[in-house]
Image (cartoon, rainbow, N blue to C red):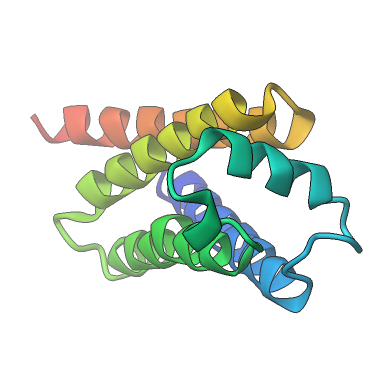
Length: 134
């Protein structure tokens, strides 16, 4: 199970970094089809004129919430730290909440659905490992 946790956390972390970099390289979203998504964000999220003129702020939030946290969880797993399963559980929950927000803004789509399942898998594996400790 530890290999599954390590693989999931690293895959999600790398995906978050790639997504953030994509948002920073083209903050308008024109090259990757994000323009309509930006309009949906502006319509549904608070303070659209401050945070959603482009994807720069979204890239930072993605990197921090789903990149840095996943890398920290992976580091704790590799170090076999006693808090690793709690960190993985927290990361799974954070990712699922992120995806629920995406569904609310954009509706269901294949990539969001896959990442929700990955977050769910992360949480389930962490709970199994925590249960083994009891």
